[in-house]
Image (tube, rainbow, N blue to C red; front, side, top):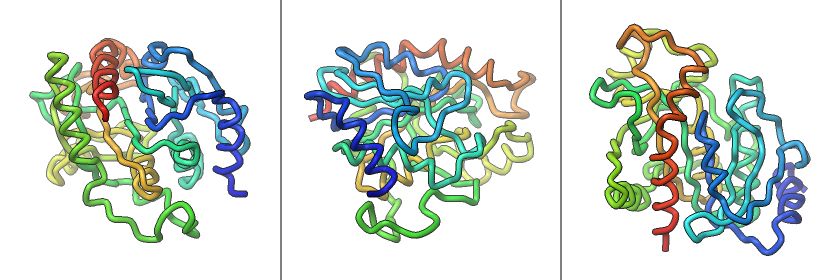
Length: 271
């Protein structure tokens, strides 16, 4: 039995009659959405065999399973980051666990810096594509053909139909939703102004330290992905703000209510 199958077997035993088909990954400062999940069952990562621990402030490190927007969901309240020292393949593990219990659609969120002055702190951005700046990939190594193919098409990684539904949900809630390309920077240091200038030339609209490995893992195992960046700051060199994780958490919490409304409305509208 593979590592993700062993963890999924334990998790499945905790679900009762729930059969979630929608997964959610909650980024920095956005974990409050889990409190909206009704009839919630909570499973800490520590109770699942082989599951790495989340060590970052603002990331509780647990699955929350229940109902949101009238649909059964499973949410990761906290995520894993490569800068914590987790091997890159480990970043795929929670995604594969969710897939193994039946999740088909994955909603990924993050806190990010903006490369566009007109998309300042407090904005929400639907991710249309990404730049993998890290030089790494969670699929490097031996491929498990039972999980997904050796070579994966990423041309529609952030599903265009789901993204259209996300924009419809935003319009229905009166929420302005930008759209753009997200660049993955491993961290844990924030980017330099020179790197931000380079990212802008390459076509990035936002930058952060997560999401891309989870998207790759999800597409590899046959899941549809939609993703949102919660913009907490203008990127390095664009203003005089001193960047810090505390600032990121504080700013993401300010927009959490709009983010939660958007996610719940989107999920309620899924057929």
